[in-house]
Image 1: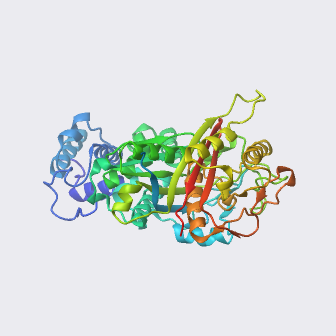
Image 2: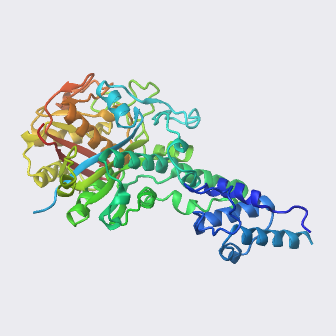
Amino acid sequence: MPAQEFTLSDLKKILHESAGTGEGVDLDADILDTGFEELGYESLALLETGGRIERDWGITLDDTALTDAATPRALIETVNRHLASAAV
Amino acid sequence: MRSAAVITGIGVMAPNGLGTRDFWDATRVGRSGIGRVTRFDPTPYPTRLAGEVPGFTAADHLPSRLLPQTDHMTRMALVAADWALQDAGVDPGELPAFDMGVVTASAAGGFEFGQNELRKLWSRGSQHVSAYQSFAWFYAVNSGQISIRHGLKGPSGVVVSDQAGGLDALGQARRQIRNGTPLVISGAVDSAICPWGWVAQLAGGRLSEGEDPGTAYVPFDARAAGHVPGEGGAILVLEDAAAARARGVRGYGELTGYAATFDPRPGSGRESGLRRAVELALADAGAVPREIDVVFADGAALPEHDRAEAEALNTVFGTGRVPVTVPKTMTGRLYSGAAPLDVATALLAAAEGLVPPTVHTEPDPRFGLDLVTEQARTAEIRTALVLARGAGGFNSAAVLRVPAK
């Protein structure tokens, strides 16, 4: 188990700080399985978000990690997988 | 017959007024917005005055989604574009996307954003550089962001020709209207009031080192020794006159003439291209010199440039035969933003019948200009000439005609 788990609330904070929140989007709603595109985040917003996660959490995400993760749930799982392998 | 391009909306971001009303209230009474730089500590630099836009808080006007990805000047441009569209009474969502374009000018791009990201690169490493640096610094970014925000898919672009670019953008907007796009958002907003932007401007050798806001930028004055830089500008909505008329809008006035020329090689001894720009713009407007009621001069406040501008005006109009003003003495020089703001000022001046003053300047009689100084002068303004000259040899001129009341 990683020492610390990356949670939805961590992701929401980073999303808002690095890319803002779209008009009419409620990040506090149940967004785990809502697509990033539907949440108003394009590829550059996700690139910025990924950079922030890497810096804040001390991991390196491979290039496809962000493009493959279409929803917050998928991205959180990817980040936690990296955290787990980094902790081994 | 070619379509006429009328200006139907104005959005102003100026050092002496946020929004058209504040700006005009200040400008008509000669209230200046020039003061000591507050956006960074200017103490170590030889130039310490600027025209800063007061009281602009981007988060009050723009969604949070746009804040991490925009420079200060883009935020001001986006809000000015919102205001211009509101002023024009246009909701872009109700019009065909391909019937609307956006052509702005930019002199420096997003300098402050770029400075912050470069600082992160040097001090903390490449992982810390914002992905948005890829476009936030770029000259075309204001056109791009305005286009995305309002869903404008018609012909778009950016013009980069220093201060002259502000008129060159309007000329290009008119070209697109003539080519069949009914509405084009145009104009410019610039800002580079950050240490990196400051040293870049200092390197140009045209900045005033005066410490007194009352004497630091005095074009056509024997004391002229460079300009005070400023930030801001104006975004304008230009429409095909027939399309505007169809929705019951006459607009502030028409862009009837535009021309751009280039100066000869420095040291060649040949005349500046400015006179030819004025003559070509008049010809393009189908106007003769005596029809021009007021000239909004470029006002570089460098002796050689002031002399060249005065000579061009005196040659075309006759010495002292046309009222000349430089309201940018209240704002500093706004680079690309200056000329669209002068165009807005000319239209507001015509609406009120008042030529706003050139403040602080005591005109050098050797220039032979009828410079409107100290206070505004009442005048019937039907046709105005706006000039803009850019570092590197750019000269642009525009003629505006305002319908009779």
